[in-house]
Length: 393
Image (cartoon, rainbow, N blue to C red; front, side, top):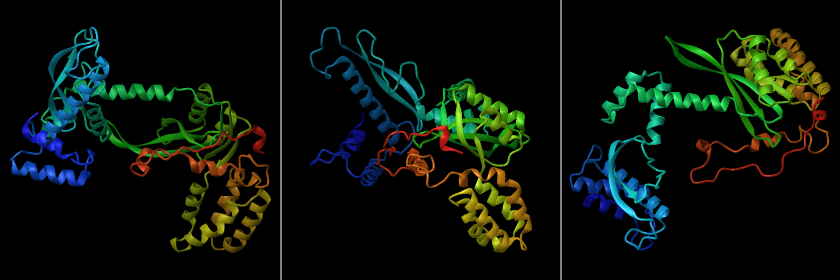
């Protein structure tokens, strides 16, 4: 540890409270000190390289102390002794960093932060995956590392990283599932994929709402844009084989063969067409200036408390918009069989009914990227809601 990095680390600690000072203030002070002493920010002997080296070595020393059960310089306990260090170069997100890894006498020490025989930190794997997802070849990724990080990463190493993730994805895709999902959502995202040439590929996502109101992605399937009943039957058969015994409501777009495949897999499941897709399809038959009015007039239809009330609201919609937009009326009439699921769930059913618990879906924990900084993940409290097949007509 050189004099500058020692001073930089000391600058992190408030001399009175012993706590780490404000991060922005710290960065300004360290950068100013680096400029005064002519120390570069990046590069082999740069500030970031030295700080990374010191942090890793300090963490490794703390791990060895925990393993040996005594501090450095204290009397060893029995055979638990230190045995010097060995030099190792690891590839980090700021480039190669040479560190001294402490050793124990009998070789039983297994560090976690920099495991034995590992030359890359986990952040590098994430960089490789990110570049691969952007369509770069293994050769282009290797050239990127040499140009940006000054480090050589072989094409074989890059292939092993991507293959490892593919194996983890396969394991995730075959994991056991819950026997009951009250609600199942089926939707597609279109992703640019390089198959010889770059083209748009639809990936179908099946997401289930668990009995305690949390959303869970059950699987992702790649398509070619021409999927039919056979494709969807294969998807739902796979979900059944993974343990899904019953689904109350399946929410989907009007994809060819999908409703029939749902009822082949779970014959009592009610298929509800996605209202957002149906409204979007309605816009094809109306001018842009009429869209707000159409949305406002359709909302009482799909939020009605019962199927009878929904039909009454739709009659009112037809009276108002039938002459100006007959195609929209025809679209909703032809789709009514798959729109009726939500209105048929009555608001007056006993507490604990699926409809009364619908607000629990909005209480699912947010992903880490959307949580406020410094906050713990929010978990929905309470017990699992008591639902049964009789909950849905």
